[in-house]
Length: 247
Ligand code: BJW
Ligand code: ZN
Image (cartoon, rainbow, N blue to C red; front, side):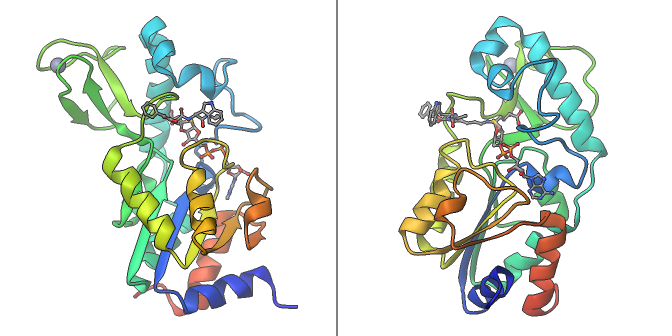
């Protein structure tokens, strides 16, 4: 019987429109913790309790301590072979979009350019008063950090629960899901919406949707097949099978 891996490679060989949704699992092999499952708690709190505008309003310093730790992790991390394989894939298809839920910047550092960051970026912060934005991963001198322009409080440029996703990026991600012939869902528990819904949009529109994740997820039943391997192993194998890593 033909394996899921071979079916995925065959589907990619004949596709010209491909899109990918990634989540925290893609960065696990770079040493960045995932949100759910073992080790997914922060100071005893679930992410749903820390990553909200309400939690920030109540105790901005506590929320910033969480993000300062994450900024340090992102600074120390390096892209892994999974990120690199996805960057190598984009030149192989006439239409390719990588939509990531990750805020760690590792896809961009690996070279992905047809990329939307659905949940923002850990490297950016903006002033809640004047919206001035700064971008770096340097250690912050004080928490919460203040705006160099007006002295207002800054917040991470991250999409928290209850907040809308960036309008243009979300529209692009939906368009890509609607038109993709092959849609890959990699390293996400597919529990957080609306991002997880992109896989359903793609499936409804007729794409062959494949999952790469060592574990089953909420949406596994709707996928055409699943490769139960770490993305840093499976994705380079896919790119190799497509014939080399350059376009
Ligand atoms: C490997 C691996 C390896 C391990 N290789 N894989 C009830 C029902 C439906 C929806 C809702 C509801 N109640 C509320 C909502 C909406 C809410 C939501 O979805 N909640 C659910 C939790 C129920 N969503 C929102 O609020 C969103 N906004 C919104 O809906 O706005 C509406 C609106 C419209 C107009 C005006 C105003 C509002 C916003 C969601 C924002 C999510 N933000 C976070 C935090 C970012 C902060 C930060 O990073 O600090 O984004 S939550 C967190 O989860 C983060 C992630 O991007 C996101 C997804 O997690 P992900 O990436 O899937 O990670 P994990 O840990 O869950 O899974 C890792 C996977 O990797 C696992 O499956 C492993 O097996 C696998 N893995 N190693 C491959 N080596
Ligand atoms: Zn300001």
